[in-house]
Each structure stands twice: as C-alpha cells, then as structure tokens.
Image 1 (cartoon, rainbow, N blue to C red):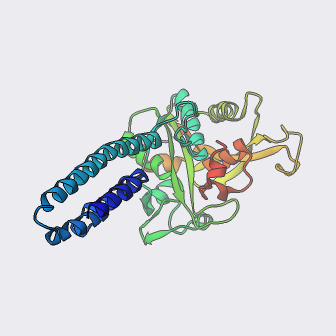
Image 2 (cartoon, rainbow, N blue to C red):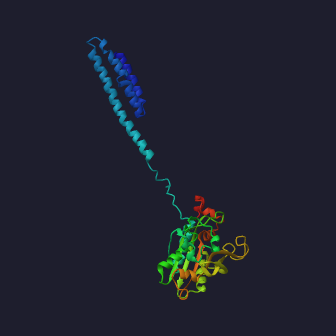
Image 3 (cartoon, rainbow, N blue to C red):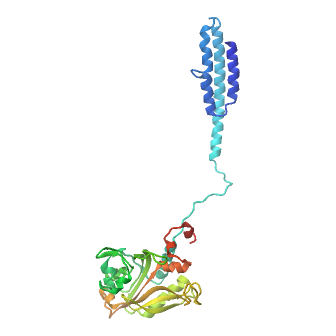
Length: 340
C-alpha cells in the first residue's frame, strides 16, 4: 500500500501540473479525491492491513490527501485569476481604435421641400393652416364652385368612402374651412401643406402625394400681387435669376386662372429635353378667387378680393433635386435617401 500511495502521489502531481482550466481541475478532483476516486479505492484496502500498520498507512494517506488538497486550492486561485484576466481583456475597449458612431437619420427630401416652402411663405407673412384628409364632398368640391354635375369632377378620380365622404383630392378644402372660421376678419393669408389622394399611379403620379395651397383675401388684392408673390417664391426656391410666366388656364375656383411656369432649371431657359425645348417648366396653378367661392365662404365679392395657388410638393422636389421618377420618393431606398 505504501508503494501504491507513492505511485498515486507521483501520478496525481504530474496530472495536476497539466491542469490549465478550472474544468480540468474539477475533473482531477473527482478522479482522485471523489467517492470513487483512486485515493479512496486505495484507502478502502486498509482493512486488510495488520492492525499495527493501519495508523501508519492512514497517516501517510492523509498527508498525501492534504498535500493534493493544498495544491488544488493554490492552483484554483491561480486559474480563477487567470480566467478573470482573460475575461476582462476580452471585454476591454481598445481606445486606440477609431470609434463607431451611430448612423444618423436624414430628413426625407419631401420634408425638406415642405419646410423650405413653409419658411418662404412665412417670411412673406402667410400663416400655416391644416385640415382633415378625410373630407366632406361639400368642402372638397361644392364650396369650391364644383357642384355635383360639374365636369371638373372628372379631372380628379377620387377615393370615395361614401357618397358624401372622400379622401380629399387637394388641400383647397382648407381654404373654404378657413374662410368660414375667420369671416368677416381680414386679411386671410394662409398656406396649407398636406397629403392628398387621387387614383393615379405611374412614374409621374402617385395615389398619395403632397400639395401646398395658398390663399390671400383682403380689401384690395390684384393679379399683380399674385405674380409678385409667386416670383418671390420661385426665386427663393430655385435661384435669384429665376423667371416665371403665367399662361391662361381654367380652374373652377379661380377666375381668371393661370398655369405658372418657371424657366427650366436644367438649361436655364435655353431649351433641352427636360423642358421639351421650350425653356419653361410648369410648377403650379393659380388665379384670382372666384366670386362664387368668396360668397360661399361668407365674404362679399364686391368688397373683397383674393388670389389662390396650389403646387405639388413632389413636382417641386423633382425639379429642385433633379429626380426623374416620382416613385423614388416613396420606395424608402436608403441609398437614395442618403443623398439628401
């Protein structure tokens, strides 16, 4: 037994020196010191020894056990410290590396254009008004001089929710609502940015798009005032050298009415493919508020006058940023949006 204990001590110390992890150390403890361990197996043979040798062998076995226990304890502390250092090293931050900052979002080009339009007209003394996107037929059409049998309704293929309720086809209903709310106070000087809906969907049309409507009513408002406001807007939006022209047109809610063009932003008016060699690009519609619209809004057309205009935000954005397909504005492609 003395020889067995000596061999076990030599073997155990050799294996103990090869333990590099706490898991290895636990496995060693079970192998040699556990209930079925090798040291325990040897000690179970103590009963076969003469009575005089048992105390001596017991003392030797305990000495070997204590030695292994002490070495296991020392090695456990070393391995714990080593593993903690490795863990801290793995979690440490190398301050010599460049930081990875969070990626910042950007404003959508339509939001940028709407904000710029608002700033321009706020600078000219206009106020911003809003209204419901689900609108009554009365405000969307009838209060704007478009009765139920009017052919102009065919120009706007609408989303009806019921015979008298629809998704608004333009932001003009807010004009009627504002006149009702403000009458008889003057002046009425507002712009109305917002979403509108029509049944169109192609490279230049979307079923949902954005408009900015403008309205000014006062005791004396002339067509020349309208032209001056729109020229100022065009020059602030597209450049100080920008020119505009007004072409006769028809809108049920204005009389006289005009289509408003700006000199082509691509060729500066010399003629190119974008403007069809004309040197001009259409940007909005405008005109003097129809007397019938003033009457339905509660104003006397003999005492006051006004002008109104409306522009598509997508159209302005496409011209300002050189975008050739309106659908790019709604596809949410991050590669496209990062350019703005």
